Amino acid sequence: MRWMVRPLSIAKIVMCACGWSSVLLAGACHAQEAQAAGAQAAGAQATAPVFTLKVYTNLVQIPTLVLDHERQPLPRIDYRRFQLSLDGGKLFAPTNVRMEGDDPLDIAILLDVTGSQKHLISGFAEAAGQLAANSLHPQDHVSIYALGCNLVRSAKGMPVASEPVRAAVENALETPTLNKSSDPPTPCGKNVYLWGAVTQLIKEMNDATGRRVILLVSAGVDNGTAITWQDLHQFAAANGVAIFGLNDGWSPPAVLGRHAPENPLTALCESTGGIVLETWRNDLNKPLQRWIGLLRGRYVVEFPRPQGLGLATGAHDIEVSIKRDGLAFTTLAGVSVTLPDPKITSDPNYVPSQQGSDIPVGNRRSQH
Image (cartoon, rainbow, N blue to C red; front, top):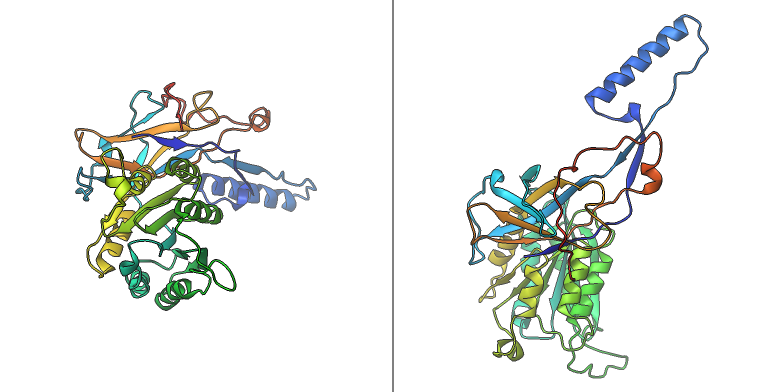
């Protein structure tokens, strides 16, 4: 399956070398201090030079969910079995693979009250409180939304705590404007603007610093937005957002018809780094715990950004596969990588890195 990398303008960190914590630079700092002390003891008036260290991001990290062909977890995979391909190029090994583990999460939960999942949503507040207490960590953040006639947000980037999360869900569902289109209230019609609502969530996650994840408690019906699920897939990939779904397995009749090739919600989730979780009971604790377990169990696949002209501006395909397991299901969250700024690389003091110079890049550019 194919996933996008969207390069952005280069990011840089400027700091004094003596403020850096590496052993080598710290040693250099100590040498400068000793030299300065000797000069002062000898009565020298010269001032020691101040150096500036410029650091440029060069590492690509791909959060990768690896499951079996039935979308169930696999035993821990030997990291040496991971392999990548860029734009259909030759396979190469990542420089590092690690479990996501306790990396900070920025989670947005959208409760779609317009369709068939109201029986799950009615008990979601208590389950969300339990999720915050038992599965989330202090470094995680949660945003809560509900979609009816309008999109309602009751919390944005709130620190994780059981009671505030539970209250935020209740507040979203009890908002007077959720199912009213005007004041005085009038019926808001039968159109559902799900993909437009998810687009707004992604926009509001722009300043999130953790790994970005959306959970849609919804059957995946959209019959009013001009945005297609393919458009949404592209936008989510460009912003590094993995989308998961949660419902009771019900699909709209149009999806079940023989002329419909796929379930849009399933296609959206599995093309952005997630899956659709199903539960047939009102007890939401287990599927929510499984969801967080899947996130913690993702593999973060790392490799250096290709050098030279191998990676041009625009969308690119990344493929991650597992050696000797053709049935493994892998889905990747989208990422953005930086490209060198010519103004920086033309600086006579710029020291080019050779890391990534051997990464092969094919010529099959993404069609998304």
